[in-house]
Image (tube, rainbow, N blue to C red; front, side):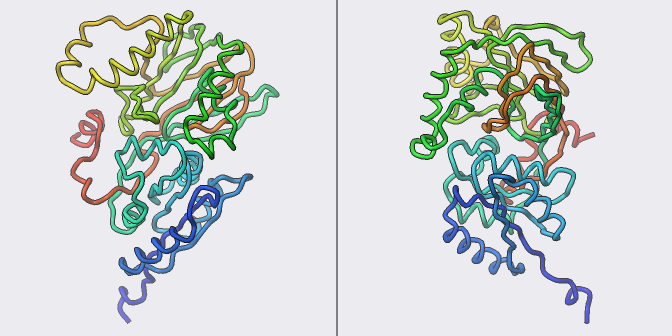
Length: 344
């Protein structure tokens, strides 16, 4: 018997949120794709409220899966990515739910399930950065997590914490309107002591701080225009509006300047000559530490993570392999920093 004949065919794993997916359709698509590729039968791992995907992804790696598909919303994607950290097993995105933020930022299909499933068996791997956070709770306990899109503290996190999950199921992202109204009713200024990389510590009063690995949000809103998933750097934004006019300035900056003008060469030239508004400040770094003067809500990739008193976040460059269509292979890597690193 030859070595090739004695080697068993590879198999894929599917970590899925049963609330978010059409399981019958998903199983049919996976079965067809694995048979076309000549792979062994895929193995299935259902998420739960207690474990939204971390343990299932770790088990899939331990079982020997060649690729792991994550079928669910942004929370499922984030949890599976955390479980795949420090492994070479790639993640395939099977988007579902409200945001699909990582898929949007990677310009992957959002509504063609069979195409996304096929990518698991026929695609190529792209390495992207992982964000890692250590959270200190008000009781002094600590826990660690990973994220792939964005972490936030302030109104952003309060909005998510205040959003009715049942309403979100029915109307999607429009449910966040209710959450933001509730957040704005309460005290929404946060005083932080923070340190970026090796810079001296500073104090700042903000309404929201967002730490981004990606820059594009739901609704095609480009919040962090220079963010790239493979540059080894966080893009950070602090929102500091002073009343209604401050929010108008932020809306203009994000919706018009980032969303429209930055998409053309002429627009970018015009913006290069304009001053940044005081109400919105951009920073870049590989590590950021901040401590709040009082407990604050915190979110990772759109999931409420409860209250924190301090956060330490750092980038793990190339910490996650993501499966993308083979037709996109020539477009990698995306960022100028990654291109330079590859050339070196």
